[in-house]
Image (cartoon, rainbow, N blue to C red; front, side, top):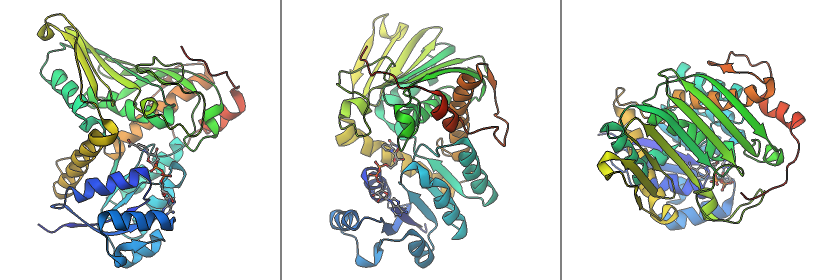
Amino acid sequence: MEKLRTVLIGLGERGKIHLYGLLQNKEYFEVTGVCDLNEKRVCETAETYMLKKEQLYYDAEKMLNELRPDVMVFATLPHIRLSMAELAVKYHVKGMMFEKPMATSLQVAKEITDLCKEHQIKAVVCQQHKYLRSFEQLRRRIDSGELGEIYQIQANCQPQASQLGTHYIDYMLWANGGVRAKAVTGHVHGNFYLDDSHPSPDYILGHIAFENGVRGILECGYFAKQHDAHETGFSHVIMEDKYWTDDRLTVYGTKGYAYAECSGRYGAFTSDTHSMVEAGDYDDFFKKEQFDAQTGYTREFGVWMLNDKKVHPCNVEMAYHGYEILEGIYMSAIERTRIDLPVPLPLKYDAVSILKEKLNAVDYMKF
Ligand SMILES: NC(=O)c1ccc[n+]([C@@H]2O[C@H](COP(=O)([O-])OP(=O)(O)OC[C@H]3O[C@@H](n4cnc5c(N)ncnc54)[C@H](O)[C@@H]3O)[C@@H](O)[C@H]2O)c1
């Protein structure tokens, strides 16, 4: 099998994990180049992974022009997603893997999705927690029928919406078998994180009506139900690991419920668990689980690249729908009404810009 010539742009925290995922899947991917603006990061990565000098770049376009890859991976901050996607188009890449959130506005998310469609680029957004063991366990309970008929899916995340919210909307869609949302309502408040590299209100509460009658309840931010102990105020640099894994996806069915967290914890209460809560913990997201999840996520992208029928569950069209749900929640709060999907384009306004004008500061409080 001919390998997919692959380049990686951005060698920060996430870029290194993408590189790990690619190198664990050498049967599909051959990493021909890596790039970062930061020389230290390039040198460190080269040393860790024993890369050759000719694989190292400081300018993404130069690398694309010289190496003409099949696959372009970028793990940069959200504000430069569209310019990266345009480079992918210019240099005719066939596959693109990039980080969440897929954009900082729905308009840009749509432009990226359309570019991929128009130029037949298979693209995935890295909402990879589905590949964690805790989530795979939840998937098995859904698929086996142990939960009965699913009627509600709930997600709580301590980090703000554009950090973990887009992950968890995507996991709600995944838990619901990819069925799309029909309408949403939302509440938002707090302006601290609207000036972050991942702009969102400090708290959002959204109610999602899916086309199959299932309801979704999403809350993100400091007022969300906390599932772990951590001391965190509003801050642009939060170092505490337990904050970043303080989330939970709970699926309720007519015969019981089950949940998964990216911390590794999982649990269920069903007749199979003898009407007791059966809980466990795979632990160690940062040392092990996130690497294994990345390996599975990347492998399935390799599979999709070779087989059109094996569409990746993190595909850009599903990610766009997730983004649209989030935007709908913001719009509902702004317009004080229900928002029916799909959100009509072009947008009447940019929701984040309006929220910057309208929202006030709130005091951080632990609940
Ligand atoms: N999927 C997940 O579980 C997960 C977890 C954490 C972060 N993320 C996301 O990953 C993304 C990156 O996060 P991070 O923590 O790695 O950020 P980071 O700031 O540590 O790394 C980004 C890197 O990109 C480089 N860069 C920026 N512009 C560039 C350009 N034009 N050409 C080449 N290199 C460029 C920077 O120099 C930096 O080294 C964010 O969008 C974040 O939300 C995802």
